[in-house]
Structures are given as structure tokens and as C-alpha cells.
Image 1: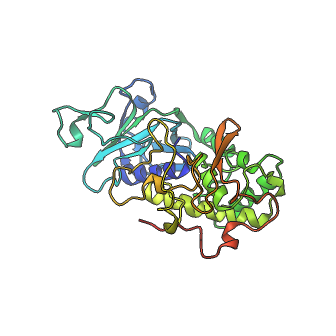
Image 2: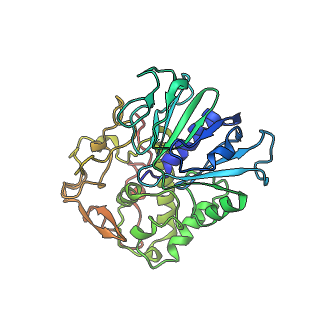
Image 3: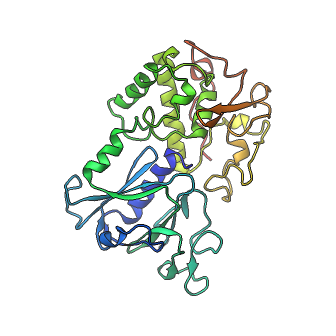
Length: 348
């Protein structure tokens, strides 16, 4: 499932490509009936909150974005959702965001072209699986495979936001989101591994960030939240903010330090492997070098050589190193113990 950094990257792309423009909307699949009512409206921008995307549509660009005339298309990508883009040069900096897809217009997973392969995006015919197409003056975007695609009014949007925990990628000028994160975990008897996957505790974290954040904090996934100190949790929050900001910039989750990437550069893949957007692009950190513990069960830890373990936790698989992640209570986190290994990863 795409994690929170993906949705923030997606919101930025949609706002850049269509923000403030009058757009055409349609549902080639026929499963989003509201597309017809929104056709010809102005897309005011885009908003991400955790794994949720909101696209505000209004009759004109001067409408109050908080007013009753605005309708919000609420999208949750789920496991298989993705947006695929095509347009004038420079309109979009990625061909797809979400579950990995081929380029728009390519036959296997993208869209078929009306003239058998023309690169003119205006002539691309949508596949029948497209739930929502947005077309503007300079490009188009197709949504396929989402778990949710619905229209909400302002109150409906707020209800979704109210049930979410703090999002590490949303602005936090007064530190209130960090405090909510710390307080929410310290009040709970649940394990930190379970709490990090609870979207009401922290919005946007998925299984990769959960596993990697706990490894970087040298923290056992089974420690109860109430046993952790505020200092440890503040460090974890700052690490998470930096890791997810990197993901939002690059479209990829990379949690390893450069000096560790060539050590035991393997992962235990499923049928299609742990794919990320951009795997086919040259110069990216390969997925085999990107993680410390995620999908590395039965392989040696990059740092200590101990075999990485995995287990079920709340219906999802958790991955950890039983030696490196020996911290179970009120002790310093990895960032404090290892000042030479800061949380910010090297960009490539």
C-alpha cells in the first residue's frame, strides 16, 4: 500500500499540473458517477493527510475554498491505486505515483493510444479501468484501482481529518503534531509496533516506515508505548519527518546510510518483489540497498550480522533485528547513541 509520502508527492503533482485551472472530468470505468457533475469545474488545488487525498472542486477560481460550494474528491489509493500522468513537457515530473505503473500510453498497464502509439497526450484514449480522468490545458491524470473515490462536502472532509492522527509531512510550526504523537503513544499500553500502524496515532506510516523507524531507533517492536520516554519519541518523530520528507521529494523510501548499503545487499522478495516508483530509473538507490530490516527476514543484519526476524503483529508482518533492537524501555535512542549516523539519508 502506498505510504503517506506517496500521497503528499501526489498532491504536489496534481496541484502543480491542474491547480487553479478549469478541468474536464470523466469516469471511463463508470464507477464514479460524480465525475459528470464536476466536469468543467476549477480544481483549486490538492491536499494530503496521511494516506488520504482531497481534491477541492469549485464552480470558479474565486470561490472561498472553505465555503459550501466546494466539493472535495476524497481518494484513498489502498493496495493497488495509482495515478498515471501525461502532458506537455515539464507539467509532471513523474509518469506515475502510487502502485508502480508503466508510462501512460504503454500497453501493459498504462493507456492505449488512439493512433497506435502517438505521444500526443491529447489523443490518448483511457483504458476501461480508469475510475477518474482529469484533463486540463497542459496534461491529464488517470486514477485506477483506488479503495475509495468519493465526493464529500466540507463537513465530510473534516470528519475524515478528525479521525486521523498527526501527519509528519503536514506543517507543524508550534510543535502540536509532535506533542500529539508523543502523548498518544505514552498513554497507551499497546506495543509501539502496533501503535505506529494505527492511523489515529500517526497518519501516513505503513509497514516499511514502521519496520525501518523502529530499527533506526534500536527499539524492540513489542515494547509498550507507555514505557517509552518523551525524549525517545521526540527523536523518533524527527527521524520520521526527515525520512518521509525524503520520500516525498524522491518518491522512494530509503532508510539506509550510504556506508551500509553494500553490506548484505539483499531482500527476500515476494512474487513481484518490493517495488517502488522509479525502480527503472538510473541512479536511484536499488531496493536491495534501501532497507535495514523490511523484507530481510532470514538474512544477516547489515550492522551486527544477526539474522533478521519476522512475525505477525496485528495482522501485518513486523521485521526486526533481535540484537540491534534490544531497547525495551527508558533508554536513549539510536540517534543519540550514534551521533555519526544522523537520521537524514543521503540524497541520490
